[in-house]
Amino acid sequence: MSVLARLFKIGQAEANSVVDNLEDPIKLTEQGIRDLKRDLQAAIQSLGEIRALVISLDRQKSEAQGEAQSAEKKAMALLAGAEKGDIDKAQAEQLAMKMLDKKKTADASVARYTADYSTQKAMAEKLQAQVDGLEQKIRTFENELVTLKARSKTADSMKKINKQLAGVDPSGTLAMLDRMKQKVNEDEATAQAYGEIADRPSSTDEVDKLLASKSSSESNEELIALKKKMGLIQ
Picture (tube, helix red, strand yellow):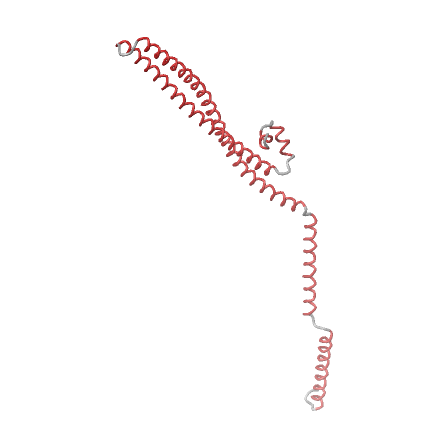
C-alpha cells in the first residue's frame, strides 16, 4: 500500500492520530501525491492497452462477420447455380456444405469476439472512471497541499511571535519604565536646583555689597561734617 493510501484510506480518528505523530506531514503528503501520480501513470498505461485490445476485438469481430456473410453468399450461389444446371447438383451441395461449415466457424468467432469486446469495453470504461477519479483526487490533494503549506507557514510565524512574547515579563518591563521615569524626574529636579543656586548671589557678592554700603555711609558723614565746618548747616 502506498504512503498516501496509508494516510487517506484509514478511518478519520486513525488519520488524526497518524497526522499528530508525523514529523513532517507536508513532506508525507507530497510523497503520497507522487505515489498517486505513479499509480495514475500505471492506470493510464493499462487503460491504453485495454483500449487497444477493444479496438482489435472489434476489428476481428467485423472480419469474422464478413467471413460468415461471404461463406453464406457462396453457399447460396452454389445452390443457385446447381438449380440452373450450371453446376453439378451433388458437387454444388457438397461445396455449399463446406461454406456453411465455414460460416458456422465464423459465426462462433463473431460470438466470441462480441463477448470479449463487451467485457473489455466495460473494463475500459470502468478503468477510465477510476483514472478520472484518481486525477480529480490528485488535483484536490495538490490544492489542499498548497493551502496546508500556507497555513503551516502562518502557524510557524505565529508560534515564533508568541514564543517571543511569552518570554517578555510585562511586570518587569513596567517596573523598569517606572525606574527610568523616576530617574528622569530626579535628574530634572537636580538641574532645577543647580539653576536656582546659579541665579542666587554668592557670599562674596554680598560682602562687596555690604562694604559698598558702608563706604557710602561714611562718605555722607564726612560730607555733613564739612558742611558744618563751612557753616552751611548747624
